[in-house]
Amino acid sequence: QVQLVESGGGLVQSGGSLRLSCAASGSIFRINDMGWYRQAPGKQRELVATITSGGSTNYADSGKGRFTISRDGAKNTVYLQMNSLKPEDTAVYYCAAEINNYRTISGYWGQGTQVTVSS
View 1 (cartoon, one colour):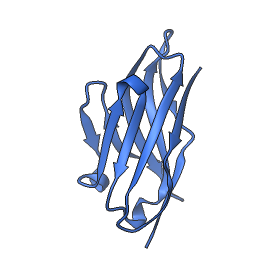
View 2: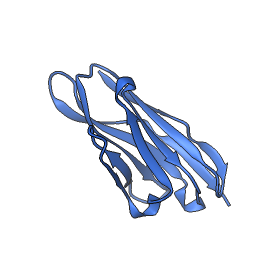
View 3: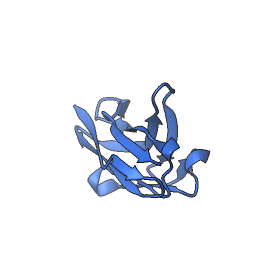
View 4: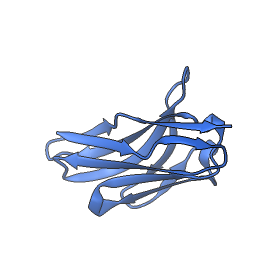
């Protein structure tokens, strides 16, 4: 079994910062791409940022210049540093990862962590 567990969400004022973490655990041989997605009420889930095993990053336009994705291979953990937060960043944030679990390569999702930005 493989699990992704997010942490670090919460309530913050506009202009503030939060750092999200997502730790993968279980039967893991190798983690390929990791990423963060978010879903606001009444909207579809959307990409926030991704990072490859080699450290290459990709960001949605909404977060460029404000969000930074990083990962710690030794800890099987991906982070999302969010600065200059805006009310429109309010959403449930989910981490995702493509993981080789010794048998197959599959996609996994975390349970989500709520981020609320007040104006």
